[in-house]
Length: 200
Image (cartoon, rainbow, N blue to C red):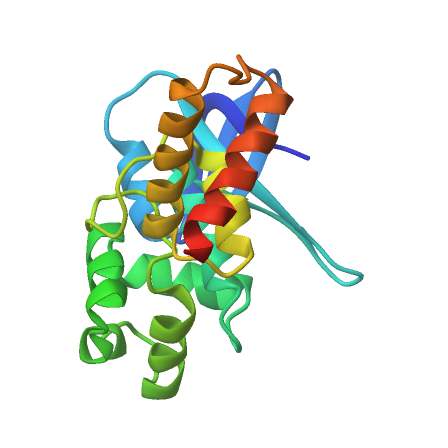
């Protein structure tokens, strides 16, 4: 519904930041690390957003970057972690450390995050290893096929393997005489070839 907002920081307290844009002041709930990152320097800020809406509550969450929002959403795929818990985890550990801990299965480091117990830390490793994509903790390399990588990851494939399979599919298409030039047709063919590559 909302991808991002651009405006100037007008205040905030704790994990809440106020962003003024077009005569409207938005209240955004954010990880403390992200608030600190946005607070550096003046001028217009871009905040990536996610709307949480239930029968009892509606809150707009904010993030300093798209990869931080993805981390927030991925954390909620872990049993027992909701929006508030995900926010607390992201406030207690930076992106690079989180990715490294997940990739290395470092449950002890995750347990150091306030409010995070051993069982939940273990569930995080089992669920999220290989699923984060920013590369700040070398969890996964950058891939130009972001949406396709996400789709394959949602099917249960490792992100690194998915990115590699898509690169191989791209090379196959480029070498073929009947390759699809661009658009949805090419994406569909890349997706199909990537699944074949992953199945090998």
